[in-house]
Length: 298
Image (tube, rainbow, N blue to C red; front, side, top):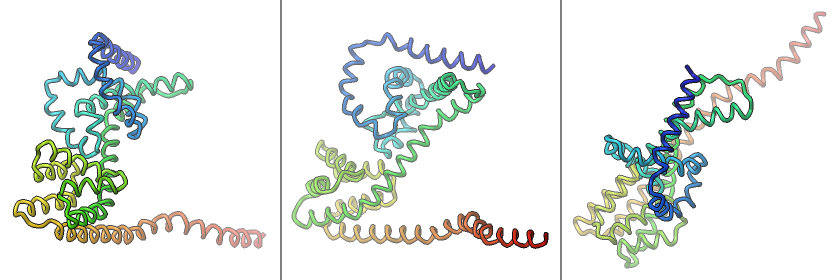
């Protein structure tokens, strides 16, 4: 049964390649030229994505794009991809193709390692490997989202301070964001500011661009920041003092979060202390006494 499962997996891989091998080469080459910059940067998102992307992009994404439920796929993964900041590298169809590719890729990799090492691994391990392959992209992208959100929270006070200073110095909102992008080190928040400025330059309203940023980042702090700016913009209020107030509020919340993390750290340290350090102390102190008593009785 497991042998035939392996044969079926290999057959699916061969079918996918054969189904797409005859696609127009000129069209594919043109697409590859457009994605050269993405290829150069894709390595920062992990070795699995880096080496998997050329295969699923060419052989699986075209099939996913023809599926009847592709609209559901777009709705399900569009925000996740935007929150992770990888919209330039993956589309929702690409992400789903990545999942499908690893269903086949992980078992094939398992078989290759088994054969190369001549390991006595059971073939039934291919089934959990396929399951891991399907869910790995979800785990990976959730980790990217959490890390990106942490970076944004960390950089928000400095960025909002610079926005306030720039606006009070006489710059408009777009120019102030440009100044933040110029002066700050590159981070996810400056990337989001860059997207906002580009959207406004091509015709989006400030409110629309800020709503889009809040939707992409998916953070309470960012949603509050954008909502406050949108409300101030709608009544024509001066946003300089508002930005200063927002900066102070963000700093206070971050300090509270750090204090809370510090308070919970003591509890987290307590468990390793009880289960690792205390037994070691008892062994060091008690074993010599026990040996002395045992030998003394003899």
